[in-house]
Amino acid sequence: MQHKQDPSEGTHGDLLDIIRESLGLSDFADVLEEARRFLSLPQLEPVLNTPAPKLAPAPSGMSEAARRLLSMSSPLKGSLAATYLRSRSITDLRDTGALKFHPNCYYRVQGEDLTETWPAIIAAVTDLEGKVTGVHRTWLARDGGSKAPVDTQRKAMGDLLGHAVRFGVAKEVMAAGEGIETVLSLRQALPRMQMVAALSAGHLAALLFPANLRRLYIVRDNDPAGNGARDSLVARAHEVGIEAITLSPMLGDFNDDLVTRGLDALRAHIRVQLAPEDVSRFMTQDHVTRRSG
Image (tube, rainbow, N blue to C red; front, side):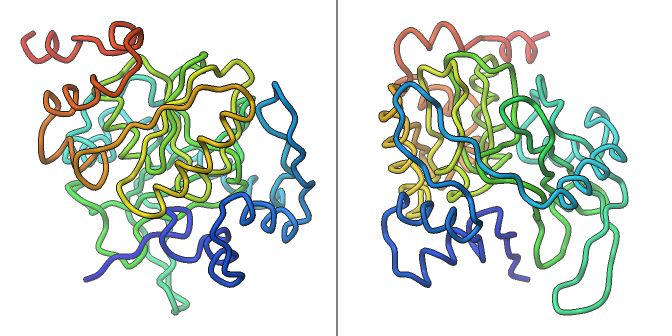
């Protein structure tokens, strides 16, 4: 069965992708400007020394529904969600409070008035102040060994534009990528660095910057959408005086690297892409201690 991604994953139907294709726009800045016009959001004016303008929220009903779903979910530790992440070689789950588990999350079958329930990872999408604005759902197989055998395995709801799923405490250095598993894979090598998952290439390009951010690592997926998001984010970061450094995977993304090549190879590959002062600051040997202990 060929599985599809939700629009939030940046491959099918994302509002930004629809605008880009329908209007024939190639520049991410033009796409974002048109999206703001479509959503009746205020237009951006370049202002130095500011992270980005405030964006109008999505309809409150969706954000409220997202918060309700999150409140009904349980901790990640010891759940099928943790079992699934281990199957993707993601074992270091420190600072993953944004992730929860729901044992019976509703799934609507595409094109039919039918619903099913599957275990799911529930990820909180938050703004820069920590307010929950949406959630992202990843449906899992009943044994937690893989994603659920459904057409659309991941969906998001709520106010997503500019916001993200966040891991760690915001500081002056941060890494930002598209997918949750991609970002968590990089955190296996850099567990002390704050990271965020924007959930799609389009939303990564529109990510709002924390006020104290000075260096941004852009976690690139190895595809055209990932390249476009990187270029847009680099340009936006430079406009407000933030240093932007791209981290590129060996394969399609960093989870592919982690699963296929292993953690040691991933660490070696990342090490040479970091600013020298960040190697000792963020690249710890904790995993060696845990494995030998």
